[in-house]
Length: 95
Image 1 (cartoon, rainbow, N blue to C red):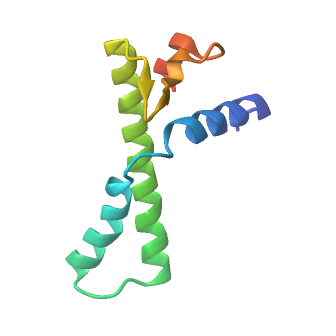
Image 2: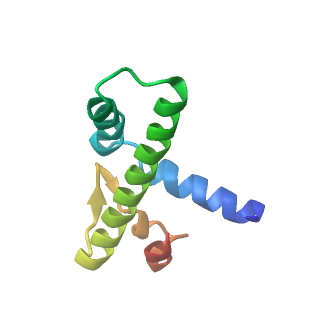
Image 3: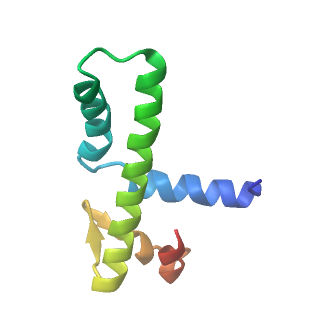
């Protein structure tokens, strides 16, 4: 179980890093699932595919944070990179 502090950190990190992207990886999961089954999806199947899609979006966000640190980038999606936040810095590589 995560502490309240850890939950708050993860929420802050996700709110900062995930929005603003194209989200095409996440939405593609549902579309591909539907295409592979060649039928409409049930509510449960949509929910499960959506969870997988969001996991892929979170993974992509991590890759971008790591890339920003390695490249010493200053901005991402029109705002300072996550690791440039005073309370984050190189701890970002663990996010």
